[in-house]
Length: 394
Image (cartoon, rainbow, N blue to C red; front, side, top):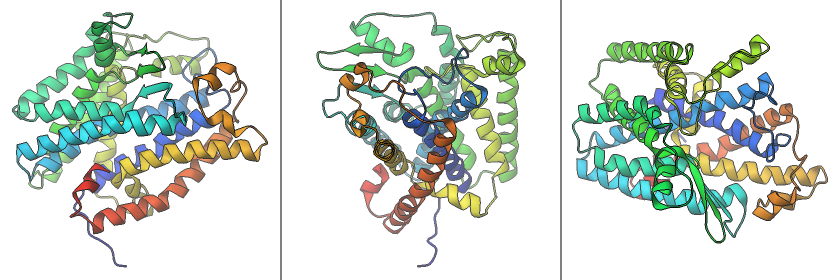
């Protein structure tokens, strides 16, 4: 079968594909690394190692890039459509993603039919931010840009506002900025991705889409990408070195230079601090600058994942979870402990479970290679069936 033409912007899909592959490393670590379910926090400087820390740190790039580019894709999708059409799509797809996070992803993550733990993560954040963006698109572009900058640069001013308990105001603040969880009669609901800064990230991504309009000069776009990337990293250093602003967790000198560097890079993700977003989105802009017109076997590999991100996201969690069960079967363990109900976690059966870090990397490579084939099939299916409206939701 001949090659099917695509009108998608390859550098954007390439960046998305790279972060999707990197994201799988973190999720493999979640299911396979020794004591990952109990006490092994890779960013805890008292217990981590440099390689474990950077295994986690490199995956910090995934959520901000994914959400930023979701805004960019929204702009590009709406650039040839009426505002009302775009708003309807963003609203419906945002609500759909919220349902997917609650119903589908939480089952795939835990395999607990009782839904004893509902963790609202990145798909929830994208969905809710899309719902908000469906309203914001009616504002002038400059207003969306200003609002996005205010949310990204200013939300750390709210770090000292904290609520406790399960009252309405507390829950709303958990959702907006603080994060936190609430108990119901039969389950615990965790708002892991406070939405306020992510709305800002998606809004800025939406305006960023202007750079990829067909009539936007390529040289001007590349210059802007270079300045944006370098500027973000420079501002990161200006704010982070003196602990001036932009993260509730200041870095401090450690006993060794290596661990001092880890402390410096140990920026806050939940919610994403300003310096967290600067150090992750800055390299993303530089990546787009460098890869504007690059095509080779490697880019072709990553493009596949970047063109079917939602399909890949859902599938890779399912495959990783099943692989963890298979690993227990092979090693003579009890695969049932991977049915991650509250009883299993509370019973201590996961204490001591897991494998060394090199096993994590090996499993990651194998799973990414395996997922390439269904992802490529689905990419081609979407290209061959552009007339099917429901595919835009998958």
